[in-house]
Length: 143
Image 1 (cartoon, rainbow, N blue to C red):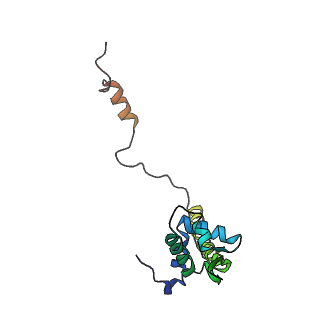
Image 2 (image 1 turned 45 degrees about the vertical axis):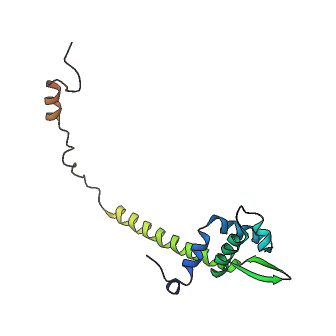
């Protein structure tokens, strides 16, 4: 299922960008200070074009911005986009914690009633006695 970015405020692009370990590493490196795309490319075992594509994905998601300084393009991490991702995850966590708490409350309200044993798994004394009177087929003939 493909989610339209218009429906989720760009979260699909944001999390898609964050799903790649190279892009997350670019974010970490740029969080310490602006880095040029060529400097970033020198850090990875891939082509300059491949690193440039990663930066473009990050830029489209709003996670980085680029600015030109002379012949270089400097990449900067945008903390507001990271905060947006954090808020989305916090909302999901709160939703699921609420569901778990409601389920726990419902389970606590139920009176404990004995459950009937599952069919085919009943083990009665009668069955046990019958079995002990017979020879166990897993054992060989008695010596």
